[in-house]
Length: 214
Length: 133
Image 1: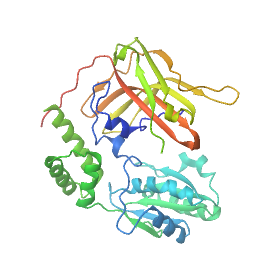
Image 2 (image 1 turned 90 degrees about the vertical axis):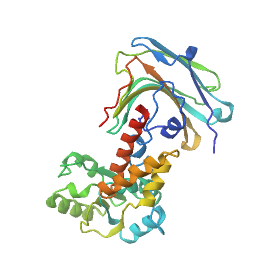
Image 3 (image 1 turned 120 degrees about the vertical axis):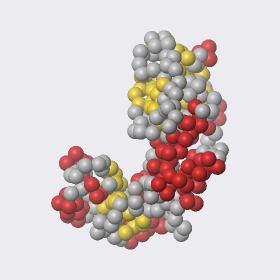
């Protein structure tokens, strides 16, 4: 059984004649979560060039960037390409305060020479756990790709960043009928949240709700 | 690329139901894709939509597969019914929505999938009002 809330979002969003009469909000998390929103590569970069770069780095690398600049979205975009490059990606997403990998021990036990271990939120780990993980990856000859807000001592694959033009593109991708009011809120939010696009999109969610209920 | 041609409709075109009522729907695959369909899955589920993490649960599920031993003509309309539960009720909130839908998923050859979805309302909870700053 494959049902998930993320299925057929685009179809659902395009279909305004919903049977339940409840309009959808184009900035809801289902539309902006990693994997739902395509990653906007920087000039001269695409998934293939990043995979080639990662391969040249011996399948070890870090993706760094501030909060809400698309690190997890980039990982989601790279995963299928990693599989095509004959590596088996194993994604582990760490959440606030998750300082060890104990909860993921069973999955980690499956790592081998064709695995690319992808740790989203690597800096959550304690220094000891980072050391242990890197040593385990070397011993098993598996690759390691991590995301972090600051460099963590691995070769840099790429750095994520959000500028006004990219944010505007994302706005119109999500909401083709966006107005000057949306653009103004987006600009203000990016300034207020240090270019954190996720937070800016949630501010747009609130704007959309207010506009609907005015 | 295969054009989507899945047909899904509510009996009597009803889209509002009270808790405990029976929902009946009909579904079939159109001519353009029926030959490629290996299986159809029909499900009735609720999901949340909003600013936070998503949640969902499947209330009804049925899968129909075709095989050489037991071929199925997916062009033939199939009907299903299910009694709807007492909760959660459909809700149109400011930071959270709860939505019910019937979802039809077709598994095609070469691993492709098609999805058709119809939302409906369970219960009659009024629309939430935003508190203006």
